[in-house]
Length: 323
Image (cartoon, rainbow, N blue to C red):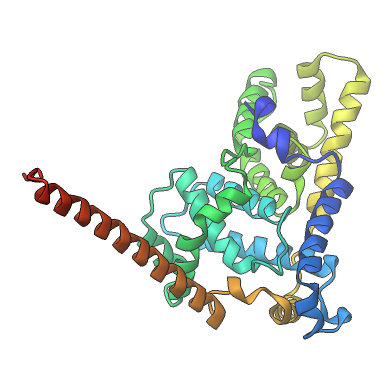
């Protein structure tokens, strides 16, 4: 149930201003933590602003949508919905300068496919989205646990697709004189997909987004439906309709940055991104090599310790058990 979910308790903000404040605060903390390093290489005006970082996130959330479209067979809409919510939650507490949005988009889609039980092996996943980039697979495997930690292991996402289905069924039963209610479904689902690109799911409930999708698709008839369902005074209906209009406006004003603008911002980000988290960098590969060597060393130490214990048993006259 959404009302008792971690999504409502930990990942829903009272307003767009509160949401932006959370992002800005987290991004400032990261900049301050690496200020000495950055100041030696870049001038302050060469750092991307909050608005520029947000444009990059908007661009890569659309990139994430395009990744989903590459899959054959296509995943259910909930996979895209879950992946987008993971992506947006990740950057509430993490700067795009620390982890590049493109890398995180791959990571979020992989985890969403697993959580939503979209049956695809890791090899098939990489083959479909990045067949020519081995580093993508390495980054995804290495950082899957990191993503879950950043999400506080709150992996269940309540999308608007299920409440939309409920509303459509209810509309059919309550308004039998409305012809072909089903024909509005496609437009409503398109609206929800666009709403995912904006920050609606970090502010409004899934049922509110679903109702907004119907109001945008059907029109004022939805207000009559709300009156019949709520059976309360007109002020409550007005408050809900106001929220629906806010959602519709958020979706309308969301714009994907043009490719040329995104390219400039990507180049700007490359100058200040954390190279230790860049799968293509020497420092990242060196860290991966060191981590692998430490893992193998620990494995060898465990093996040597076990062998010593077995040898001690033989010396003491106790034969080790064998099959």
